Image 1: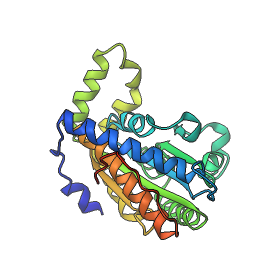
Image 2 (image 1 turned 120 degrees about the horizontal axis):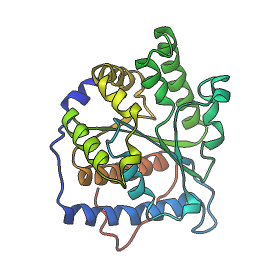
Image 3 (image 1 turned 90 degrees about the vertical axis):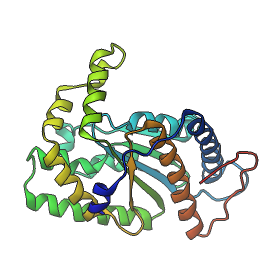
Image 4 (image 1 turned 180 degrees about the horizontal axis):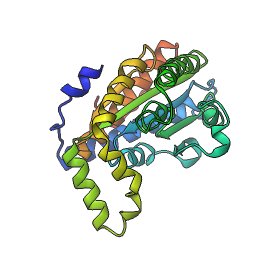
Length: 260
């Protein structure tokens, strides 16, 4: 898995026309699946809850991808959780404790903008925990995700990858734009200065926490149009596969020109 990060082709791109066509088609299919999974299309039981995790470098495009993912859904049918540094109260508990209340129940959908993987990234790189805690936490994350999946959660995980040069370009773009400046913080510059350490931590994270029912999907995010289409179509593929393996008969979406 770590080698896949090095081999990821960041030059992949899509035209604006093709990207828009495929985004719209995928959004329609996502809406159909979401209504189906929530039991809103007829007398059917609630499907497993869906949890989508977004991780990636600062300015990799997580926010834009999440907006495209949720744009076609009723706001009542999806919960987006931006995850920041733990509060003093949360630090008094096990690091996974603070996520309990936002996990999706059956028929629900939650999207995490960052997640418990901060434990293996920022907390490790900034040496807020020691290496023995890092290894223990990685195992606990895998066990936790296994428990969620076995209890009825469909779990999809994305890592958005961009080059050092593209990240700097996006940082400078944010700094120059009054509408985007709020997105750029001192922590972003700090994290950028530690990119080599982050790359090592990311590769370890991918190696340790890619498992049978919660694989990592690596996203070439240099071209935002390509990344958004890849994420939407991959999410649908992963979600459909998990529903089918649990014995659900998927609805057919007519007239969407859906491509995977």
